[in-house]
View (cartoon, rainbow, N blue to C red):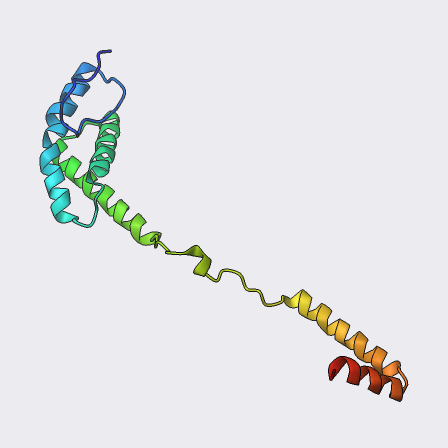
Length: 151
């Protein structure tokens, strides 16, 4: 196997060395449209800055598709695949937007209110305290309430 022909273009994919015939087809029929494809993608999808990544992914998909069956019009297929990859990128961006936060300490992420179990335990403690106060003689109960509750 001979290595793929080297091209100075930044659109050259980094794939394993294919047979010479496949490499020639790829360079002549697919990679030859790199500049036009970049211009089209940048014009059609100006909000996406990863055009080179989209092109690389498109090359890989075209290469895999050709391994399964012949491609009649490589340019049309490449543009179609690149458009689909770009739509996937935009969908992923919409599905999981990432918003940056200035200071994470300003976020309130914990609810510090007592939970149901803590509320129940507190209610039981209050009931036990009330029962204990009720069991005291009236004069002793009044003194304890005045001292503890009213200071």
